[in-house]
Image (cartoon, rainbow, N blue to C red; front, side, top):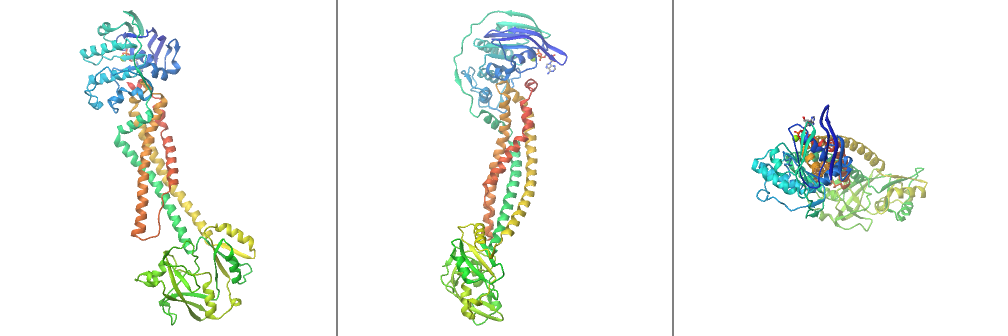
Length: 616
Ligand code: ADP
Ligand code: MG
């Protein structure tokens, strides 16, 4: 049972309600009549739990509900407003069932025929049709109290009678409180009438008491993910603005993702270039007292399982290159070989096989192309080439058989041979023995199954009289460091782009909430709590963000695929960008946090909205 006691309401210094007390029955139609401006609407807002700033008490079943107004509203109250207050961007069905978005309740069958117009848009509806929607919405939210603020005020007299008859019927099952200035109409239907003047009750007439009939209805649960559903409907209600937002957000996200991917790709490319010059598995070694390295030490190292190949660099010899002319050394006929010590690691063959004998070699694809010019490289396999070595002023050649071609493109012209094969062959050609081998520098290659740095530490400990050095390690470390700095600067700039676009979304969402403040107030009248409003506002920006991320993911994948295709098939460059899922994950995560922060002003505005002012 509803009761109000000693209600006083002031606007600034004006006392709009002055000690109003009323006790309502469980059901029946109770009307409040009085001249315009006497405080009827103000009283109705207090009874409906929309206004919390008043003196006095609002009691439901003898208990004050002042501190539980949202729950009181949600459970007990529904409204019919003079201006209907329908949400124009919702469908007719969603307008009627709006309370279903915010609470579970009992549902009655439709009493009005809306079939003829239920597919229309809200904006296409006539006055009378809107009135029916407002009525159905109030009945759908099946609270104990139905509050009607001048429901017939703007209607044609015949329609007003129809509405009053419906309200009369409704009042058999619940309490209907009606405000009107039409004394004549009200007298025909009401069970009780209060007369108000200047904020006070002047008269109270009771005509009859109704027996309360409980309702035959079935229970429906609250819609699942209803706030998200509402967010999506709100998002769709301004499609063009939403698309603009998605475009802005996508651009700034793409900016970050591209920048980072490109800089990482570049860093990888630089590393790969370094390691193509000096393999990542390579380690140089020297005797710490500058003595010559011996072949027996090489053999000892080669026996270790972690070491794949050991090669010595002879001090007194110089490798001039290879060519097909055997008679004498002619610089123009010879391809200079920059690298004759590469290990076979991860070597895939284009054609032929690996070297088994000392005089067998494999050449890299780029070197093979250089050797044959226009012709097909495969015909090189099985051919003899002459490798020219200089010792003092003497230049002599060693004949090698090309037994295979690797499918690698190398920065330097490269041949692959068995460990120290050239030393064995040179010894025969120049007729010297092991004691005359003079090599200050050796290079060993770590087996791919082992970590170079661990092997390095192990060797340092095992052979303290030798100095080992990881080739290219410090260079690539320095490059990594520099690239990290570059990346940081780029990221700072793209971060700024992101933040500015988030200010944009914050601003747009704020305007959106301001524009929809009336709709938010309507939702509050039909059971939405401030928390629900928060979820709807936040949900909409997250939906926007989510769609922007789908766009970004799609464009990102297309971009990487496109760049890789162009690089590898059109420009024939051995460089590819890879899709970095971790990068996407982090940047998306960060953008959600930033969206949340940018949404604080609209959230705050939506949650603290003054329902009554917003409805005016
Ligand atoms: P009624 O519904 O009986 O026509 P209202 O309850 O709407 O009257 O208003 C009662 C009085 O309170 C009026 O004099 C009106 O000017 C005043 N009033 C209503 N709302 C406000 C407000 N937000 N600020 C100041 N005065 C208000
Ligand atoms: Mg009024």
